[in-house]
Image (cartoon, rainbow, N blue to C red):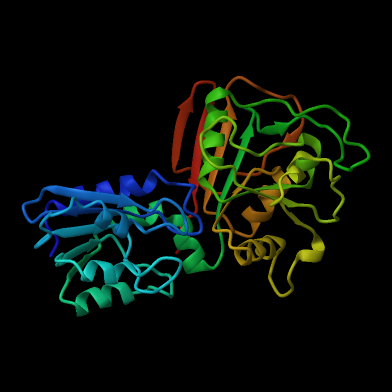
Amino acid sequence: MIRPEDQIWMKRCLDLASSRTGYTYPNPLVGSVIVSIEGQWIAEGRHERAGEPHAERMALAAVPKGTDLEGATLYVNLEPCAHHGRTPPCAHAIAETPIKRVVIAHRDPNPLVAGKGIAHLESQGVEVVCGVLELEARWLNRRFLCAMEYQRPYIVLKWAQCRNGYVDHLRSHGTAEDASLGTSREISGRRAQLYTHRWRAEEQAIFVGYRTALLDNPRLDVRHWEGESPRIVVWDPKGQLPPSLRIFERNDTLHLTEEDLPDGLPSIAHQLTHILYQKGIQSVFIEGGPATHQLFLEAKLWDECRIFTSNAVGLEHGVRAALPPCPPSELQNLDTDTLTLYKNTRA
C-alpha cells in the first residue's frame, strides 16, 4: 500500500540518482533512502560508478551502528538486483536485514533482473510497493531504459541556427583537399555554449559526421562544464578524414566507415545505431551537420531534439538547418538565443 510520505522519500532517491548523471554508464542512475518506522531519515546512498556498490548497499552501509531497522522502509528508484554481477545482489542484502518494506519506482527491464529482485524480497516476507513516481523515474533513466527496451542508444539531436535558418556560411565542399574556406560562424551565445557542454557530459557518446569533423576540427569535450567528456564517434563513409584531426587524439574515438555497416537494416541510421548498441553505448549526442541530423530524422531514430536559434545572428545565405521534426514541446529564452525542445513520443 502506498503511503502519503512515499513520494517525498522517492523524490529524494531521484535527486540522489540524478546527481551522478553521466558517471554511471552502462549502469542506471539509482538512489536509495532508509527511513525508520517513525518516518525519520536514517541513511541514504547512491550508485557512484559502474563496478562500485549499488545504491541500496551504499545506504545500508551508511546506517549508524546500533540503529534499529525493525519496521524500517527502504526506498529505491529501480528494482533491486537479484543476480551476481560485478557486485553482489542487493535484494539479498536487503532481505537479510530487519527491513520489511521496500518502495520502488519501477521494475528493472534488464533480463538479469526483470522482476527477480521483487520476487526474492517477497519470498522473504518483505512487502514491496511498486509504482511511486514511476514517470519521473523512467524519465531520469530514459537512456538505460531505451537501450534495454529498444536495443538501441537514446539519441539526442542538437544544433544551433541563426534566425533565418542557416547553421553556417558556405565553406568548402568537405573534402580533405579543399577544407580551406575559413572557420564556422559562431552563432549561439555564452549560455547556449554552457548548456551544450553540460549536455555533452550527460551522454555516453558524441557523434559528428565527416564535414563537421573536417571543417571545424572540433574538440568535442566538456571544457566549459564539470564532468566526463563523452566518447567520440565520427561517421566518415569513405574513410578519408586525416589522422591529424583533434578527434583522433583520443584513444577511444570510434571511427565508422561504410565498411563497418552491417547488412539487413533499413537505413544508414539504423545501421549506425546498431553498431553503437553493439559497442555498449546507451546514449549518443549528435552534433553533426544538417546531413547527419537528417539521416536520423528521416529514419525516425531520435528521442530528443534541442535547437538553439540566435536572435542576434543572421546570414544572407549558407547551409540550411535540418527541418524540425515535430511541434515543439517547450521553448526557453537564453539571453541572445531561443532554445526549442522536441520530444519523440513513441506509440
